[in-house]
Length: 212
View 1 (cartoon, one colour):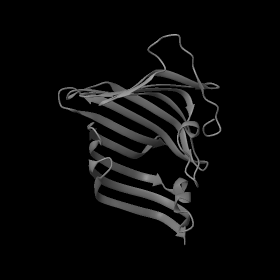
View 2 (tube, helix red, strand yellow; view 1 turned 90 degrees about the vertical axis):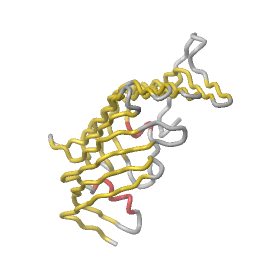
View 3 (cartoon, rainbow, N blue to C red; view 1 turned 90 degrees about the horizontal axis):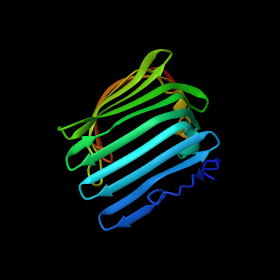
View 4 (cartoon, one colour; view 1 turned 135 degrees about the vertical axis):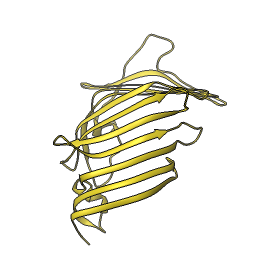
């Protein structure tokens, strides 16, 4: 069981499926499929020398059933789509489209989340966009590019938010800040790497309050 869901590995008679292979400068997880009731996930992974490949497909998957659950907040939503990242030497290929419908935190709606990733062939990076829409309005827009390196992901992103409701994240304050409410407007440039980001910009809060 994982997150109170029983996932079952789909059996395959193909020799090249459901395998994990590891060696010096080589790791591969061949294609495998797991199911839980009407939820289906298919994954594969390859990392060797100058080649990297990650493929994931989600069909009717509950967000809370696959992602680790923070102690004080419960995220919900329905995940559909795929993420395909493939780098051979310095050439990036593959495209991704992932949707999380009715994404919420502690039963407060955040919105519908749309993730798109497209390879920029010949230029050595991926273009990406992540957009959150609520009541037909874009409340959060993250766009830019990223690369794939051995131990990290260089990034060059721009984050903008408009009337973004922060109340679904109130529980993140734990015992220090409680009952967080309000909205964020922001414009932030994010550079560096995924592990060591560098941020520059502003966040404007309004109609905001919290208890200490």
